[in-house]
Image (cartoon, rainbow, N blue to C red; front, top):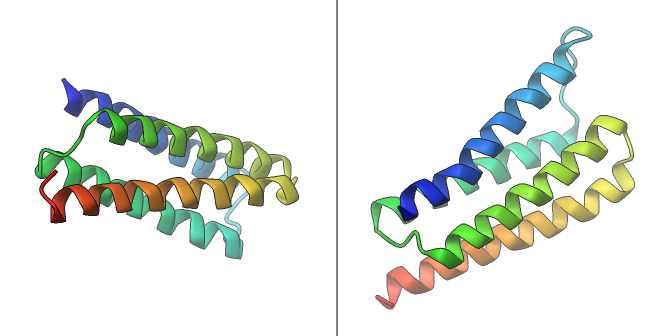
Length: 115
């Protein structure tokens, strides 16, 4: 059951990623902005921690809640990215990065100290 719960925000983030790819590409191929590069890396780190949490059986309620917070922040950031209001979008980006850092730290502590 916990596997489905942590995969749900992952599926939402995948959907958001595809929606943004289609949205940004509707006017033809545009080069990605520098901020997009970092967002893709955040998403990759998110996917990796989710897969590792599932494989090591550390996908618990805290990981699920942190995953949802990260995905919601990414949705808000995407809204500002699409509307070109990047000043507020950067706040959501930094907040999302901090939540992702918390996920990794929580996961590392659980794995290293067998909690």
